[in-house]
Amino acid sequence: MDWRGSRDHEWPQSYRHGPALYPQVAKVTIKFHGWIEELFVSALGDHVKKGQALFTIYSPDLVASQEEYLLALQGRRQMGESEFPEVARGSQDLLEATRRRFELWDITDSHIRKLEKTGKVMKTLPIHSPITGTVIKKEVLAGAHVDPGEELYTIANLSRVWILADIYEYELSFVKAGQKAAVTLSYDPSTVLTGQVGFIYPTMDPKTRTAKVRVELDNADETLKPDMYANVELQVNLGTRLAIPQEAIIESGQKQVVFLHLGGGKLEPRRIKTGVKTGEWSEVLTGLKEGEHIVTSANFLIDSESRLKSVVESMGGMSGMKMSE
Image (cartoon, one colour):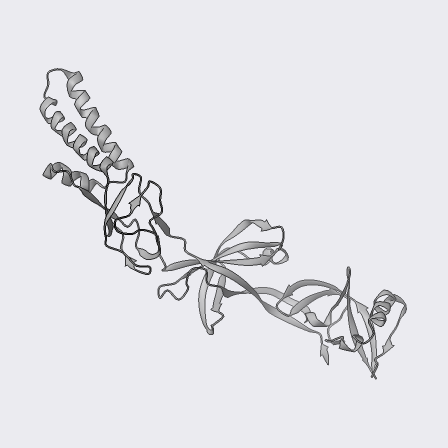
């Protein structure tokens, strides 16, 4: 089979990548130890809104702090009018110190106002979702004891996702932030999602010689799932260039060789220099001209490995060779 060299105008760059990630993720933890009393969100996949109660928790430290706050509040009311400034200032400082402790524990102002209004200590306190999203991880059980910093829920906003594509080092110069990207899934290649290159990471993987490129796209219907793999295609306008199929090129060390089909069963080895590679095509920088016929498969050389080596090593002194039957 022979192929006539031609010029290609716009080459598609295709990359297999993954996984899908979510830019807005919240981990629900607490900053005091306690016991889970009641669960309001108990299943993976549940949708929650920002501020929605997830569970209630009982904590002796929290109860003690509420009692201390009420005592400090009562003291400020009684001594706030004291003729001694030090006494009034001391009661105010104690109240503010207790209030700061609530703030450090992420106790909301609404709960503090309720405590001030009712004057009653709440045995349990509700913990709310920090964002609107979907529960993708749950480690909490009713009645269980939990420690500070223990991850209880992971909630992700699935409406917009990031996809990390691996881009080869030699391709990075063609990728720019803001480029449009076509995303397809392996199980549904007919559906094309449109994204955009949002960020090119500044580091390289020394083993694969690739860099990560972040593709951002909307995911309102939650088609993309966590850790799902997909294909990303970027259309890069490389102008007018001479290109040949990569299967036509024989690599031998630092040499790249193609065989010209001269007709009459004759072949001529020709050393070339290639440039950009994309998909199944390679740009030819030197060694070929448009319109020359080349062999796209060197299978006829398989039956003679020594012949292949001799042809490549002595190509400079050969003008042609006869293809075996």
